[in-house]
Image (tube, rainbow, N blue to C red):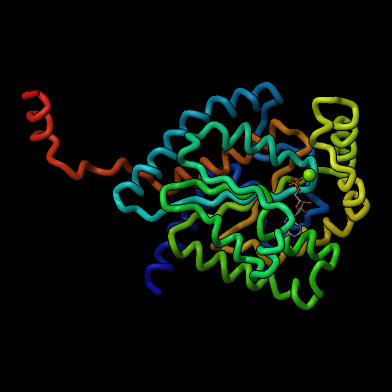
Amino acid sequence: MAKKSKRETKKSTRSAAPAAPFSEALRVREGFVLADLDPRSTPAFDGKKKDGQRALLAADDELDDLQERLYAEATAGGMRSVLLVIQGMDTSGKGGIMRHVVGAVDPQGVELTAFKAPTKEELSHPFLWRIRKALPRPGRIGVFDRSHYEDVLVVRVHDLVPPAQWKRRYGQINAFEEKVADRDMTIIKVALVISSDEQKARLGERLERPDKYYKYNPGDIDEREHWGDYMEAYQAVFDQCSTEAAPWYAVPADRKWYARLAVQQILLEHLRGLDLRWPPADFDVKAERKRLAAT
Ligand code: AMP
Ligand code: MG
């Protein structure tokens, strides 16, 4: 397939350039060890919290502009779209990403889906059924708050299906994502990595503040008991599903400001890489100006 090798060449040139520092620093490559990642670290960023917050706000306009170009391209028949997958343990800050990063984009250009425990109907279909239905249309940025990876995370930790079945899913996911990427969808998968201590502190805060009670779920404590199993399940995901077509990015998330900045920058770096141009007019501009002037 000539088309594919061309794209791969383009990608590898791009990833060699320092133009994408966050993607470079956080990409999960072969040999990545989750336990070696410091959740308080701030790769590719030298500043402190205030600097990070300022940098986040400063990039909002560019993000909004690039999203609009993506949308404009689709109105002219373009097929490209972006899918941002966000995974992370409870309290890892997925909601904050939705508010502070995705929230900066025109809501008309975003298709957000939060995946909960599957309904009866969803369970009667193959696990990728509900995922397929939620893929973004051309010109949109699709965002998954949790995803098909729950089917090899919570499902694996609790053996919600027989092991032989969840073990097959890594390969099924890779094949699915490759097909989707071939249809001009840029897939960005982000894992927000927090420490067990930080989770404890955040759950504690939810129990201290009445305005946070609504986020508290007693089941989160039960899940906490399986921390080690979850880390193993995440490591397996990184080992088996960080592919050329759909790489994983492991984002240290004990500092919320850093995680938000990093996800925003990874998204921006990918959008810049798409080289999005405003579509040319599909009408005679001069003639239309004349017609307008005559009114
Ligand atoms: P939250 O994101 O905190 O609202 O919680 C959503 C819940 O749905 C989490 O406990 C997830 O583990 C659970 N969940 C999401 N997808 C699946 C799935 N495929 N199978 C089982 N549980 C899931
Ligand atoms: Mg929760």
